[in-house]
Length: 214
Image (cartoon, rainbow, N blue to C red; front, side, top):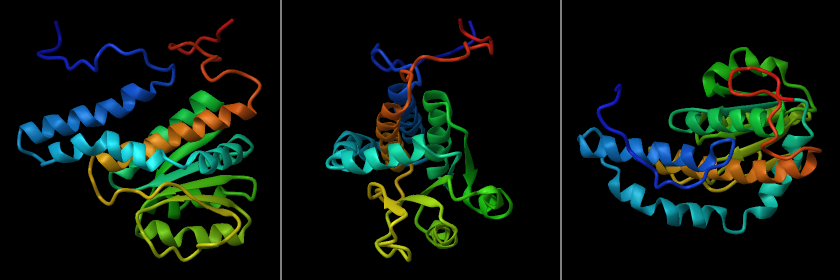
């Protein structure tokens, strides 16, 4: 009664933290925007399965390391800008929902002007980006904070620091491919993070309306 049209994703079963449905949603919006002439992304969308497969190939060890860091952290800040803010927001939500860890997402410049002050040496900061984000790790690393950087940049000032972990190479500025690949890496991190928890991923403490589950 409320909708003029609905787009189905194929009737697949999804996880409790809505992983496949989330990554399918930006693809659907991208194709819709392409069809109405706002952006031209159809070719990018067609390449996403191959891009995701390429990005995740060989990253299991990196994701396992980040998953362990996240699972043991007192808090996790996830920072990004532009289309990567979508991945940052989704990552923080999955950490809270799937791992029951305190996590929050911030836009890069917002993060630098206040929220960054609360970061301690037992926190983890995850950065998505290629510009101002590259200058953020140095002061955090000097303070003993573990930093994860997902970037398309080849020149990283803090490269080689023992507390800096590099994620998958982000695919440039693609408005739909980039946040999907970043989110795919985040999902892989979550799958490893739950290995360090005494509960299964989808055993939720609260139901969908805020009541505590029995």
